[in-house]
Amino acid sequence: MNSHSDSRADTHRDDEDAWLRQLLREDGEQAPHLDDAGFTMQVLQTLPPPRDHGPDWIGGLVMIGMLGFALLFVTGLLVHPADHAAELAGHAVRQLFAHLLDFRLDQLWPWLGMLLALGFTGTALLDD
Amino acid sequence: MPIAAEPADATLIARVLAGDDRMAFAALVRRHQSAVRSLLRRLTGGQHALADDLAQETFLQAYRKLAQFRADARFSTWLHRIATNAWLQHLRARRIELSLDDVPAVDEGLAADDEAPRADLQLDMNRAFAVLSPAERAAIVQCYHLDMSHEEAAAALGCPVGTLKSHISRGKQKLKARLRAWELAS
Image (tube, rainbow over all chains, first blue to last red; front, side, top):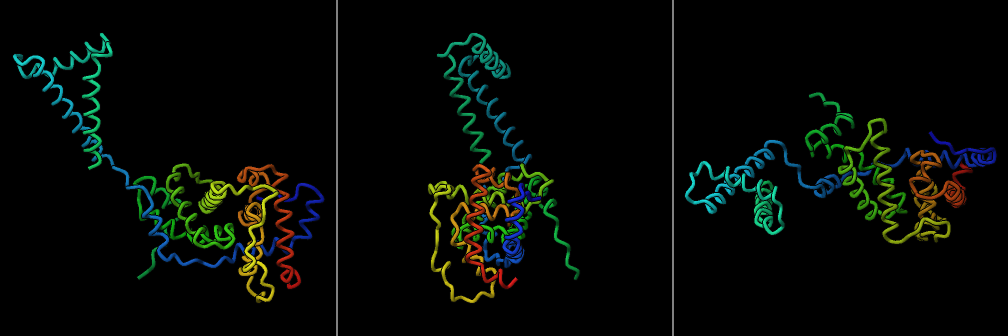
């Protein structure tokens, strides 16, 4: 609780002000009830939009994964059009790792572009 | 049909945190809006529109920080502290300093109406508070309405304890001068 009186002088002053303290306490307790009058509704309108829940989020993640696989597949087709389709995605992934191991900035830009495109697509899907 | 008991604050808070339950938050706002708005009306010296704006800001911040609320404190006390901080931020944004030299924001229309009837404590208290400077108002509300210690109030207002005591002393002198009729009546 309160520690208003930390010296004798304070205590003496507090005694003199007892009526004022009592008045302030009564004032605090007797505050009239204010009618809501649409206040709660206004507050609710200022709240941020509802959070997305698990199932939608997981669905978005699956979509991003599928899109990523499709992009890798198409990239593989462009690089090695003669290979079998089933091997192409794996090849693209192997190529990505090879690029990462043999890191050179000029090789990174196409992959960065693809990741950015994936990110934007995923964000747009999640927003929907 | 029996009326169902209203859920406790803790239950409503848990529902908001668990599932972003807007209806539960609305119930919290409805329950506490009167006290928060009253407190802010007192702090703003009776500026109802400003008080309601700050009350909205208070509940918005409460919603954002709800996960930080510790159940060992009363929800109303926590809300009142957010409300006081919202008011202090409002003052700082307008460069109204909480110093000892600040000029009292006296609304003479509210404050110096000596011929008004003295029967209504709320009315007289409103008039008396309107005479106080923002710092004096904040100090007295923190210590007397919110029942904070001097140390807590000083920390909340961001000033030394000695400065806070000066605010309280000066504020009480002004209140006593304005509320003398109530001393005689008590």
